[in-house]
Length: 438
Image 1 (cartoon, rainbow, N blue to C red):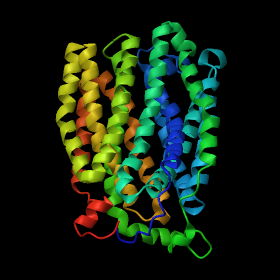
Image 2 (cartoon, rainbow, N blue to C red; image 1 turned 135 degrees about the vertical axis):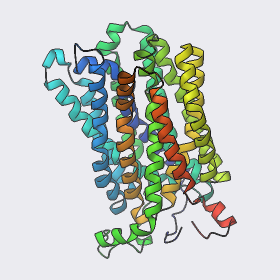
Image 3 (cartoon, rainbow, N blue to C red; image 1 turned 30 degrees about the vertical axis):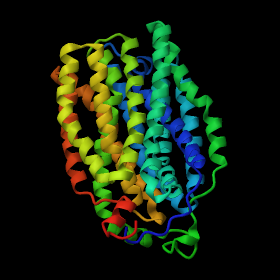
């Protein structure tokens, strides 16, 4: 990678594990909202029109994505200026506040319009905090990793997010089996959110004891006063325009994958009309597949390169989406529903996980946290924030249960074209091919 600076000495794996645990806690609450969108809609956005409360709830879910780019552009560069650790500690505190606020907000029936206003406000704060989380933590993981293991270390970014979804799924499924529908709608979803809030102090303790990976003295691009000047940043970004644009498209495609698959519980409840216990069970099945194949994808990308792994997973996924949704909608069988979902998760994990590694190791250290945070946040906000709303709207307008498959396939085709335009960034492979240092 031209212009890259030498990386710091690799750190013990336990330090990276501490970052991933904190990262999982942040994503726990954000993803839990998607699983309970139907119940949250009824609590805060009551409507006599069928489907309206769900759409309003999903729109509020999307509101959290509006502030993610703002958080990325503020907290991400802080990770380059004052260090990775202060930046992700700050975002973690903000996330804890928003988690508790959302879980404790009274329903519309109790406080009227103040309820949806508070819910939207806390979602905006969640988005701001989460937007600033990804850049510093991913930069930390890559800088703490041995060069030949960067794919695996950075894959923990996705694996921790998906482990959070898995934990939420397990709790949700347990509650769906032991609570009545009324209890689940009244307080069950709040209990799942509050569980995440309870472990925030543990996450703060883990992160507080971490060493720093950003060392200003190593980076000649820092201004004399220790800050990164606007001119320096502007000049530094120029050689990386290609990877930034391609990263935006590929991470956007990955976001659509994630939030379409996260929507499967709501899809099962609202479109397929499957029982709640069975519908929530797919979260566990999908979560296990996500975590396992995120890590497999990272390991494969260290062995074979980022680009080949992404190409194989994305091409197979593009061929699978429409047939998988047709089988799910035609048979409405739990076995087929679970099997098709797991298959799509497996391919999505293989296709998208190496991208965050490629983007992170393709930009120099003095702009790494800010670039990764901003590109990731804009990709998630543009594509991910609208995905579930668009899917729900398309189903409502067309009455066609295949509508999510057509939308997802179109976005996946764009992602595949963007992957084709990537240059390989895995350092060991670049050395083998005579492409210089990473």
